[in-house]
Image (cartoon, rainbow, N blue to C red; front, top):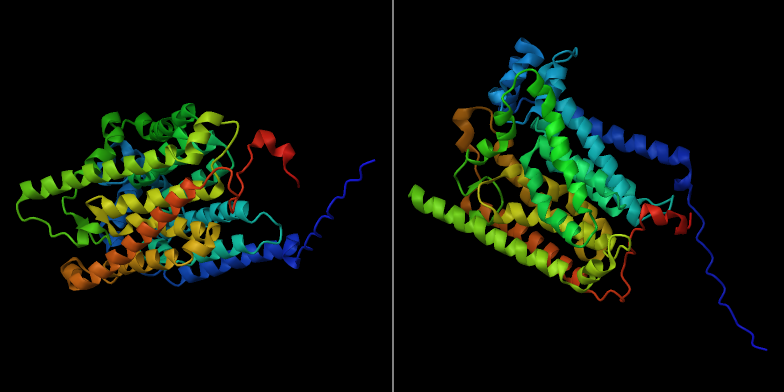
Length: 439
């Protein structure tokens, strides 16, 4: 008779008071109050962008109402953002407060998705990490100043991008692509995560047919403007017109082009731009191929969508690598184009804390210092009085470059891990397999 000895299960650590719903609700409220309080102190500040652009767009909509969108050429943003401004004209608040309130509301939505994404990594009910990540993101200098000080709206599309990452992790491809559709409808800079989407598609984390949600959402959001008589060609080509607006190699962005002097000859400058775009495309294609044909990538291709093989680490790292590499390598980038990387660098640091704990600091120093050259401007005449020296710009760009390189190296190493090797994170089960997950 054979006796089998079973090792006694390790006692589960008791939950801390943080698991209590009342305590968690109080923490949520505390995070929100702190975030709103910091921004409230900035509501009176009128940035140059507000004075020259946003207030003028608001005045046009206030005078012409929603029908002013019949010709949306008065603004260089897509119409979904203008819908929000049009709605503001009916509320009893100043244009400055209203414009900032819209961006701040999406700050909070972004914080919500950050919380949910980090909670996948730390699923215990008493985990403090999701709260810490949310508070840290909402208090990042670049995030606070973007909405509260500058009146910018980068949190709108970024909140949807973070939402897309969350839905990829939870294997809801249609929701993920819907989020990308919303993000793209608000800002062209959503394209910075397109390499991430391609990797998720090729490794069957996303379904090809779910891509239909992206143009569907974009077109549906154009319908109200189209119905009042807006030119559909102008609605669909708003981003192509934006792409031709700037010819400089960099516009206060801490990118590779702070090390490259713009040629005086416009023909030579265009040659440099074209070569830079082609070079960036080639590098991104090589990195995508490396991910897809890595050990885990090949396994994903063989296994199919019903058997997830990519880990949470690989998904989050791919999103961050995409969001930081493209604006660093592409020409004609602006100071605010690292906003997605600002946020995702914090999320990734909570996923891979031992290897990426310092990356958010490198990204934030570069990103926020790039903001400062513009935030201090009060008039157009003093625009060039507040510029960093070439040496400082090179240091800021070097900081962002080091962050990008570290992220790429960690991402490549994560994809080269043998599928059978233990990883720091397990894959997220498909919703159809949720009954297999212990609660």
